[in-house]
Amino acid sequence: MIVRTRFAPSPTGFLHIGGARTALFSWAYAKKNAGQFILRIEDTDVERSTPEAVQAILDGMHWLGLDYDEGPFYQMQRMDTYKKVIQSMLDIGTAYYCYSSKEELESLRESQMQQGLKPRYDGKWRPESGKTLPVIPVGISPVVRFKNSQIGVVAWDDLVKGRIEIANSELDDLIIARADGTPTYNFCVVVDDFEMGITQVIRGDDHVNNTPRQINMLNALGATVPQYAHLSMILGDDGQKLSKRHGAVSVMQYHEDGYLKEAVLNYLARLGWSHGDAEIFNMQQFCEWFDLDHITPSAAQFNTEKLNWLNAHYIKEASLDSLEIDITNRLAKLGLTVSANPELKLVLSLYRERANNLNQLASDIAYFYMPAQTNPADAEKHITAEILPVIKALSQKLAAIDWRAEAIHDAINTVVAENQLKFPKVAMPLRVMLTGIAQSPSIDQVMAILGQKETLFRIHKYLI
RNA sequence: GUCCCCAUCGUCUAGAGGCCUAGGACACCUCCCUUUCACGGAGGCGACCGGGGUUCGAAUCCCCGUGGGGACGCCA
Image (cartoon, rainbow, N blue to C red; front, top):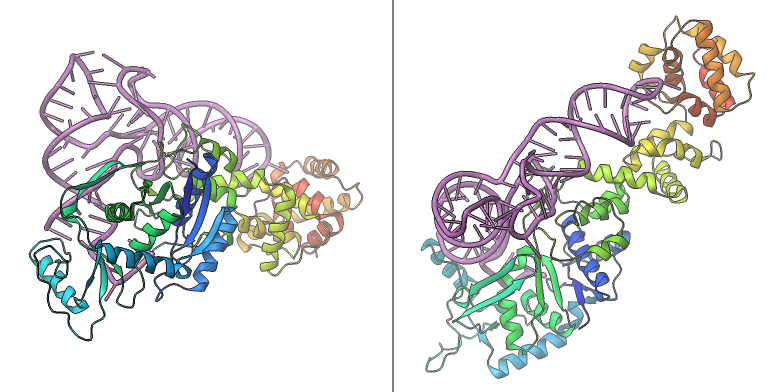
């Protein structure tokens, strides 16, 4: 049987890191097994679903390169199907109307909680042979409930958590259609997973408790039950649960924040899944290796430091062409236009080795395209009155040489020797004069790329 | 409260009863490289939640605790 997986987000917010990992795993599982990956938007909560959120999810998946073979399907466009199925369930008696009001249910829940019971529907309107149902109240539109079995257990072999068994007595008759007739989540999932021929449901483990109900409904529909793989949650950097209020950020924010998608993808792949000691691998490799057997059942804490390390790696590996495009955009956001001189690719090849973030990289090289922003503390420390004459002598030499790193290096060395100094004694003030700060790559290389004219110009500003 | 799930270095993890004196990676520390800061290289620090079993032998299997998490919606 052909493998078919799906990612089924609800468009109530952006695509966050947890959702992205779920999507990634579902996607990779389909790829690994030469199957199909389906995107389905679960937008039945009309109150909270927004078109902006749909777009944000699409954008996030597109950025990460998580392409889908089918979809996006929108549940709101499948109402007819759901209603048909509900009617048929009503007809054969696997579902029934319930006239209990929200208030009635609310107080029921409260008293059950107080008694230390699990809050659940009391079955007031559940038809039973020999049972007389209450008189149907006027003016109340009923909801439809699924008639769950009350005996026995539901069990499944979860692909990551192992066998899970839940007694039917723990389950109540859930609502599958609201009073306004719209179907609810648990029901739509069941119909869709069935009709779309999903073979493996890979989702967050907050859905574990929904699974037994969904299995029961699938059985009531005469459908084949898919396999389930429940992924544990991702905790924030501080070990706390991610939520809208705390730490949950859009995957697109990582793009904004200077991360390469390769780094984010690689990092996410290793969060909860492993392949021996492998740490760095691309998506092609990942799709070959990926399996459900090596997913950790326990929750994983996000670690920005490690993401940074991966980001540094992928910045080194990126093509100069793509880096050039990316950094040009980021410089533009800083208000800078990249001029032809110095050539950005040259600058990048000098700086990429030391960067672990694209925004950092952009701001680190900004001085090539604008006047250096001098750090006062660095200037005070390195540009001393004693060294200025030496720099002046150097600048005269520099004005007369063939502008290559080696020649520049020789010129500095000569001045260093003539004055019986150590190399840094001259290199450091040059750094501050040219870049504004005391850290940079080899100063001769910086000068070579900056250009003779600009170098001398920046130096002379300190010699007047 | 009830049900369900989880538990190896600070963090991500390897580990399918003997290969474990518990391996790798990030972070941290030391040293090397060096023209500053990085990069890179070499070392180091550092963990099987506790208690009972089962077994010749347990990080691995079972039970009980403890701790953490999730779910209990006319949300998904």
